[in-house]
Image (cartoon, rainbow, N blue to C red; front, side, top):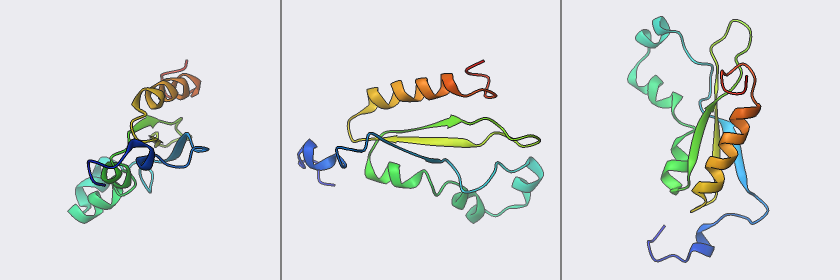
Length: 105
């Protein structure tokens, strides 16, 4: 997006405050699995974080409660353009509400 684009044109729909998505398309791999994977596999595991980075919107990843016998997954919270403060405040609130992450206990 050009630098001189007005802020109002950079923001998404006004009825959308945040988007919540997984940080990665799969569960966290074990170390042995990581060592066996190619560079492309590692890149593909980051594919969900790329759109926010390319769009220049704020995003943060939070640990989600782990399922029994699994490593915790990450949740990505994406905010509106130039709305970093509200995004971080919401991330803090979500983190405080999630049991099993070591944050809200």
